[in-house]
Image 1 (tube, rainbow, N blue to C red):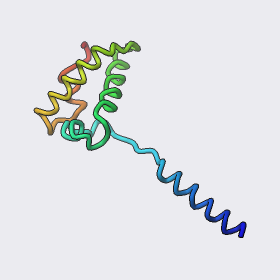
Image 2 (cartoon, rainbow, N blue to C red; image 1 turned 180 degrees about the horizontal axis):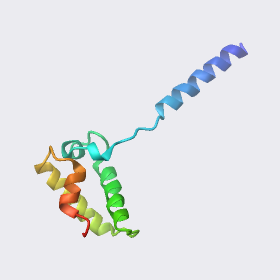
Image 3 (tube, rainbow, N blue to C red; image 1 turned 90 degrees about the horizontal axis):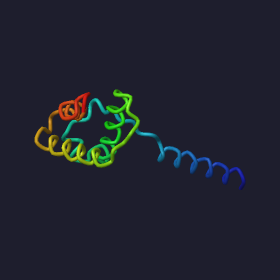
Image 4 (cartoon, one colour; image 1 turned 135 degrees about the horizontal axis):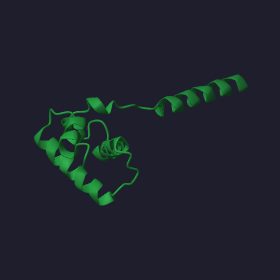
Length: 99
């Protein structure tokens, strides 16, 4: 009986590990349509990553939450009207390196 219990427990552990597998996203390939349509994840998750990416390029470690919210809204509106554009290109168009 202990072998059956051990085998069953091993199967449960494998099933749980599989269910918690990490999913990766190549943000450079995410389209605005995917972004605004929640097709990959909540768009705010992608926007947070983009915010960090662009701030890191400028060696900026500060997060202005009001500016982030404004930029998120701008990006969302831009993506709604440009669904085929890549979201990283949209962010670059709106925010550039100097903003």
